[in-house]
Amino acid sequence: MSDDTPDTLPATVDALMDELRSDLEELAAIPSIAFPGFPAGPVHDAHDLLVRLLREAGVANVDRIDLPDTAPVVFAEIPPPDPAAPTVLLYSHYDVQPPGDESLWLSPPFEPTPVAGGLRARGVADDKANVIAHLGLLRAYGGRPPVGVKIVFEGQEEYGSAFDAYPQTRPERFACDAMVIADLGNLRPGTPTLTTGLRGASEVVVEVRTLEEPRHSGGFGGAAPDALLVLVKALATLHDVHGDVAVAGLRRAPWPGPGYTEDEFRSLAGVRDELPLLGSGTLGERLWSGPAVTVVGLDAPAVEGAASAVVPYARAKLNLRFHPRQDPQEAQALLVDHLRSLRPFGVPLTVTPGDTGPGYEAATDGPAYRAARTALKEAWGEDAAHVATGGSIPLVNGLAQAAPDAEVLLFGAQDGLCNLHAPNERVLFSELRNTVLALCAFVREYAADFRGDASR
Ligand SMILES: [Zn+2]
Image (cartoon, rainbow, N blue to C red; front, top):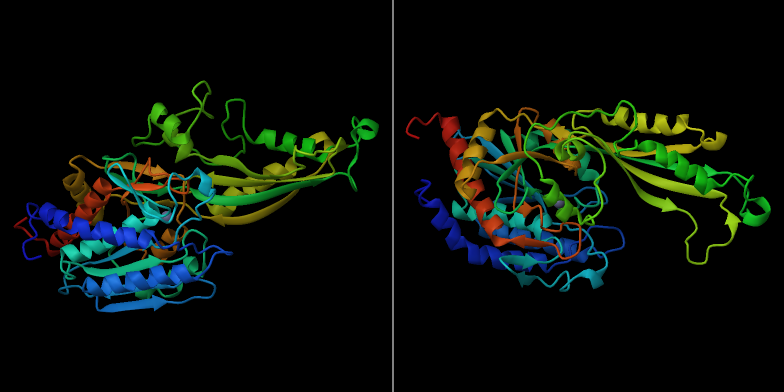
């Protein structure tokens, strides 16, 4: 593209959309699930397709990073057009979540199917549309954007891999002035959104053994300690009467920006009409800048076929989400200590800490943020909302450590209604198109800022 004024960018991007849609369909048809038990072939097929598409988009240096038990990472570079230009790292991932129960899908998860204004398939929003958006940026500039580019397309984000801890070990490869982590999107379709915080995440397993084996509930119930009852009593201490987390020391701060309305959240979460939500305070505080403890698994006898017996053993897995700036070891230790201090009916619990990973909070006052705010407004026609998300992206911290001075921008083509990780995932072409446009405008603005271009 020779003329990159704001007037021509939309037309340039619109002219690319047919091709980008068909590339997205081709990519979304590949079941690139990098979980154990799924074939590795499709993951490699998706990798190879992206290498081809990058080469066709004019990227000469396309490399791969191979790590143990890790799908290949696409790593590509375009040198800066001149020494004064900044370098921007573009991240997204080409692996997807498993489809889950396929009977809940309205069309087969790996047969991309048109829906109103978009496309339905597993992984089409998370995160293949964002992979395609990066390609759109490169195409719009004929492979020669006004900034240096480093491309990182991860192949095993959804399951976790050795790559999470890799960037810190090779910081020179990931050196950049700003990074666009496109594994996210908008609060709702049409609302441009910069995600500026991610909660940390931690797992804890708690178990109780009280008897050698089950005992007749008629003969022993009433005195023999019931392991399931002990566990349930312990779990009941994790929240107060309002549903706010009752583990002392977990940070909670007011959320300063906009958030979901209660109606919006209810419909997103599928909360039944007559039921209240958990917790108190704003939704931003409950979802983004405060803690959450969720019981994600429970080992206990199934109801179907349950014997009339006192349960000797029970176990629960807890998922903790905590304030972006709270130390991950500290947050996990608070939950572990809380549980270890309990003695429901006098019975001690065995508490085992699992993985714990930090959250992230971005500084939002640098030149890349200024450029991104301008770009998102240009693409969507309104000011960008700043939000946080309850999810976490482990690699963000690795990248932030590798390039500690780089500004980290989180935005992309997903939206609050796209059903990621759920049945019937879909992406909207309006969001894809606007994301490509925003990326193009971002690099233009950011490069101009670096040049100190007074003509702008
Ligand atoms: Zn993702």
